[in-house]
Length: 221
Image 1 (cartoon, rainbow, N blue to C red):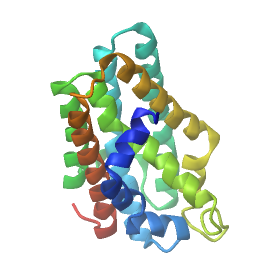
Image 2 (image 1 turned 90 degrees about the vertical axis):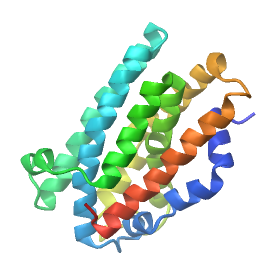
Image 3 (image 1 turned 180 degrees about the horizontal axis):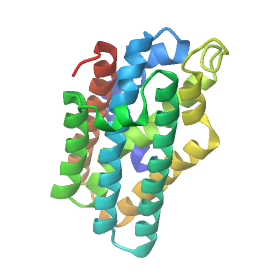
Image 4 (image 1 turned 60 degrees about the vertical axis):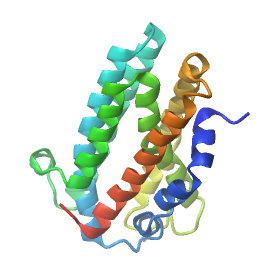
């Protein structure tokens, strides 16, 4: 039997392909993405991660036990650590930490992050973790795919730092832990009657991920 994430991904295959094989992703992987698009994405992803820390904090409140609370607290700390990458990369692209913190959220950033928070507010922790999973696990899948291709980590790929960060063992461990947490919740909270609702959440979150890439590509506000 596939784990819950793999089942969701298989049942949302069209949305998943549109996300992991987006033109923005291809540009990251082969180095062809216009630099101004990456800079815009970096700024928005920094703001995005602030909201994801809040989502994990909400998860701590909704957690059914201490083990889950510890996991979610650690995940929030990992995101705060990930934000240091954005500060470092953004400095290389001419944006200071103050620039990041004072930037205005794009509509795609607001749409995605508030959807995740709303899923958690209206539902329980399994709903919230399902909404978070395309981002948390998907980034690892995308970067690992490109790390295995010639251009992903090439010395002349300006985005090799992004590929390296999300394909490296520390982030793979983050993604694996998210899978484990999702399955642990599903073991006690998932029923076949509930599954269609989780799939709906997963599909929408994945669509919003693709929209976030498109925002970067279009440099949309």
